Length: 352
Image (cartoon, rainbow, N blue to C red; front, top):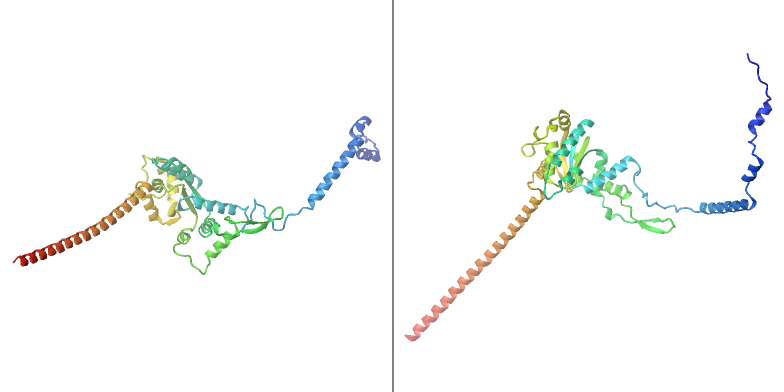
């Protein structure tokens, strides 16, 4: 066993506690001079006074930051952000198709979206920018309950009818601010007042018509424009019904008949749509998709009908006036003949 080295414990502790020695010259360089020390002390006093003055500043009790308006529900949660996304989607999208889906896998969703993108991209129209419509079309899964609340807010909440609220500005001055966003308390109260349990919704309400369809897992197809041609192409892929909307042939679209794509399409069921803020059932959606020539042809037919009605009305009015004029003219000629006949008889009697 090796011999033990003897060292005094106090000496070891003193070496550990004592600070490192600095040479005299280095110590002189590190120590500040007298004027520098006075300037540093003055700067410290000024900073301390500024801190004490800023600590006395206090925000008003009713101050609301402009970047964080008051909300009826927490604004930083995922559900609130989804609600704002859905309300923006409902206000800005003119055509929405609603589908029920049943446990589609990620591979099946990819195959369905691929075939839908190819079908929409094959549409060629001179007056409609088909490339933009096809690129902005989107098939996505939605949260049913949050989408239901978004429909209520879009229909029953009118931001223009919300009055201003008096709050304090940063300076303490009272200002008028309007909080009418989709997460505000005004939107929450408007929805609660419109959907009371003891008062049924009117039949003309779009939410009352579409709410029975919002059951189970849902997916929506959104198109940025009401284009019957693109709608017909989407129906031929997602909900084919010959002869109006036949499925593409295997020669034209071999990927459509792929087992994965067919498995995903069989799990989708079209239940309705929302077109230009109007609710359509399955037959109504097919009617819109079956408009030949698109909306331009429909507008041309409407103009022709109005012109035909105007021409018919003009012809009827002219015919009545013409018949009245002919009747009066014939009566006038009869009266003139009677008068001329009476004068000729009087002349004959006088001559005789």
